[in-house]
Length: 327
Image (cartoon, rainbow, N blue to C red; front, side, top):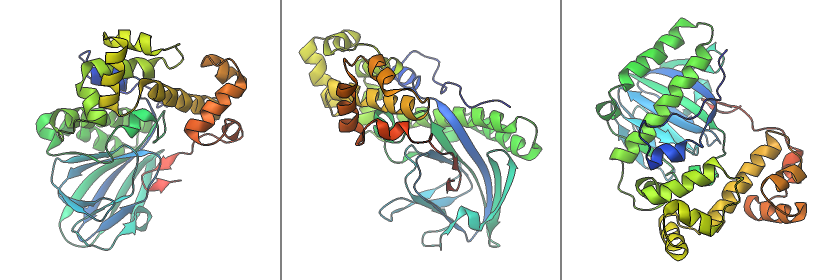
């Protein structure tokens, strides 16, 4: 069986988006093909894993706050932090959890879903994406809650072939289908992000600004690719190719916080991964991140994460996620 530890696919050119996504890796994917007939409505609870939906037909998306957004054939939606939302054949349809429909596990982490009434058929390709970082990691936090792509197939002509391959894997139930689908979902998520960056909203702050600002993008990529390095404001300014003061001002205006604060957040989230997933000792993590003492590291960790590092030493690793929500 193939594993899910491949690097997140990136564009072929050496741009800031490519660099920023190199530090983002998929650790797990749950994937489902949903064949639904109107009327239908599915409620997706909030979860730590990201979600994506690709629409083959037409439906409506309800986001927090109650607003309904019409989705058409070829549209795609990525929710990087897995916020609560719903999909339905029409606004106001009664909503049920995914488990209320007929759900068949084709193979490990791959599901076939059907149900609804007797009306028009809509096919959805849905998935949960568990990244190597959590939803509050600075890189994912910079993304918007909902990344919607109109007519994704127009800007990404490979998408129909990719979805055909995914559908064949679901139907064939072959050995290794889960791993193959994980990699196809990996590519699909990367294409959604790239298409959104190229054709999405014109936001001039946060994620969009960082991606579209090559110099800031290089700095963020450098931090995420090597959080253990003894970065200083001066060394990060050299990555950008700017003076210390000019770099700090520009970074803050684009990202919304100081370079030192952003760097500390990245390091503490990396530390949490080492503690909970890799079971490292606190003293080892502190030394690896360049802290002179375990106490100094613990203070910084609690300031960013909200609990002391010992909390994660006693916790199990992050749970898996199904397309219906947390398992």
